[in-house]
Length: 339
Image 1 (cartoon, one colour):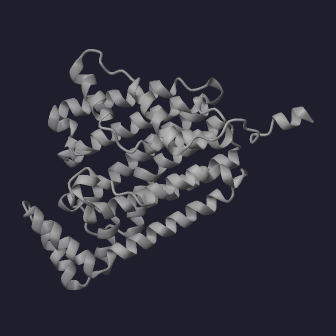
Image 2: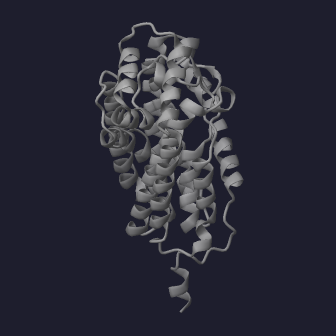
Image 3: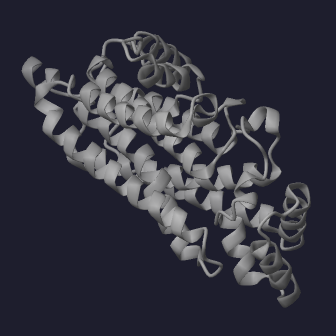
């Protein structure tokens, strides 16, 4: 009987880590990463972008998911670090493609150094991410590598769609949602599944957590779309209206292009055709049209729908409900964030 009980994944002797516990551990581990080797212009930008902080939600989710099934989060540390370095690599290249001036209220890498350095340092970050995941426990390494590689390729596909959509004015809501599924949601889903795998979850539970992450990721991006229009520069960490100025397709814009009146569509079309528009006027014009169409409320409703779907996947897990408290709290933080 004692042997049977010892195999239960829920005979965990230590209390679960809180969200703050997990964030503190993530920061400690990131601070131990060293990028001070020569040539400095290759590695210094890596240390710089990691030092800017951020929410650290992705590695935190990896540790939290592991802790649902195990009293030790040590097996999830290497994958969590890999995912945070990889995430910041995507931001570095994304900022360059968007020609963004600020990231977390600080100059972006291509502005502080130059564009070529941003490209090469980003490449080095991707290699560093693979090196970190290589430190995972051998029993899980193949599964983790396969998941990470598939996720990385999906994100590249999502970024390509994002760039292609900038030149189009007929992007549908369905196309947009597929793009953010690839560009944003799959990484959050990957974080949770990696944590579940390293914690010893069943394949079914790992997949339910993956689906939970997809829904949370979709809601996360829609919240980002809202903040770009209605957020505050000081709390958002980057300039408001950046997506509007770049003609980036967001949930609000794709919805507007479908449901706007003929006059509103013509007004948006004129702004799309201007080569050097007045930034403030363009942002204010699109915000006014979004207000007229009630798009803030429509987007918030869609966010809530994704969140409800996410919770339905948690109900399928074979774990006591109390072990999901920290994960649910983290989901709410993402849902109501201001930055």
